[in-house]
Picture 1 (cartoon, rainbow, N blue to C red):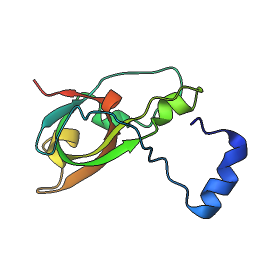
Picture 2: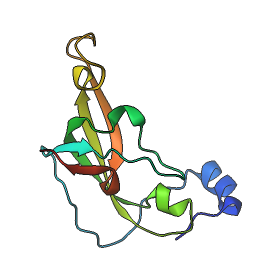
Picture 3: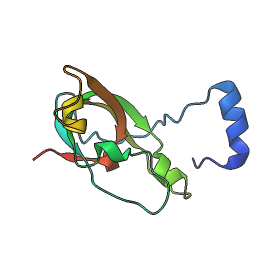
Picture 4: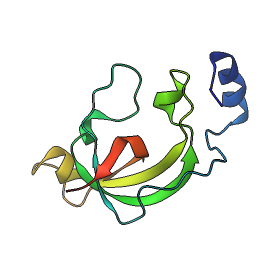
Length: 115
């Protein structure tokens, strides 16, 4: 299903979910080391720049959801959404606070296996 601007108000007011019932195999699992892809798409993305090229660990798989980067241009591309945990030092270097972690929800297309 493609989200249109006419659908937004109703979904926001009722708490609609982007979760979809699609048979999509996960690419990653909890515990996998992954790297945020270093991509710079022309259009919409929810991939934060501060995680691109950085390595984290999949904390959990939330299931299959509509991929917003595709939905924003009329493409239906359901995929798994993962919570990925990054050490603060991995993202911001040695001056980052000790023992701080950042959790970012990331779709399959945002990730690649860590080297």
